[in-house]
Length: 177
Image (tube, rainbow, N blue to C red; front, side):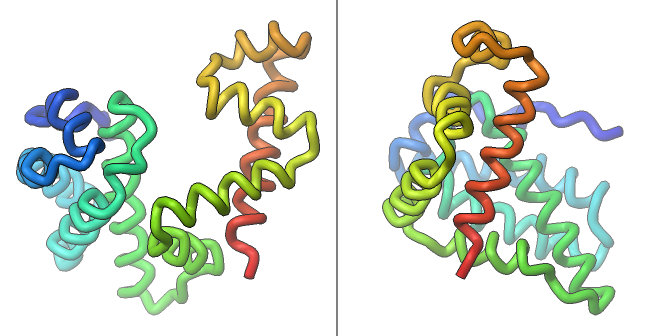
């Protein structure tokens, strides 16, 4: 198993500055993250796909760092992007067509942050009340599973199931044509 550690040269202040729109900080962040992404891609991609995966990951970092919710989730987000790039490139090389979900991910990635926020808000509003409640507590209020269970008087398992189902419904709302 590959450990996912915070990219060593990416300090939280640099990430926060890049999130806030500081162009110099963003360029520094990209330069600092590149070696870690390249090492990750070298371990997880075909040799022919390493450069493409690194480029795609850094391009998405450039475009979407402002939408990152928390500085602490930066490395996990960045490595997840790299993993998806490796998998997509592998599917292309194997002549396996992308699934509808991957097409939807690509469409969503092209949306402006303001448009995505509007669509996400509408998706959350479309949820049944019991799902909307747990999503707001978890993803907006950032409460833990235990805190949500306590507030709502539910078991941990019920809270986790509702969060999972709510996220699935939001995803379905966002990817439908």
